[in-house]
Image 1 (cartoon, rainbow, N blue to C red):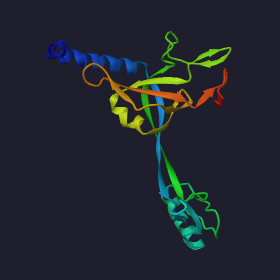
Image 2 (cartoon, rainbow, N blue to C red):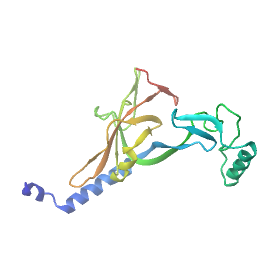
Image 3 (cartoon, rainbow, N blue to C red):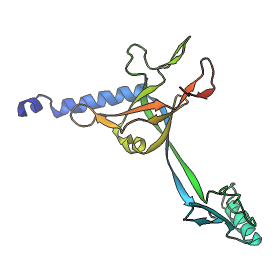
Image 4 (tube, one colour):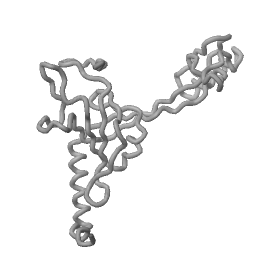
Length: 201
């Protein structure tokens, strides 16, 4: 076993890692990653933990809500965070009782559509029967992006919404050289159109 390990020198491993990462960097394109949104209780109404929704009662008087909204806008924000309502549906959280903060980031990845079909290259294939190669997508990127993909809620690859199908894998020669992510599409592009339509197959 020790003989097998000694065949590959540390310098060879480092050179391999550098070359693979250079290839990925040179051919990669940005992938939009949406992390699990952060949830926080609505600042405008009371939250009911039993029903996990708004109680339909405002926390503030009309004057207090107006003052707090003015203070919010003076801080540089343009969204409505405080608005008085008598009872019923909260105008800020729409009755959910909480607000979600969208977390979005980008990562450069080598994108391979339909990796099981060789010869298709690195793009979608349009045929008279429809779009091919847009069901499964393989991503290769730097290992530093592991945490981004591990908890990703959804991805946008070439403008198409995708979901990660399995946990990311670290693969390479010797130490981890590249991160591999397998995803599947939740939407498909219409042929010869920028419109995205749902795939109900």
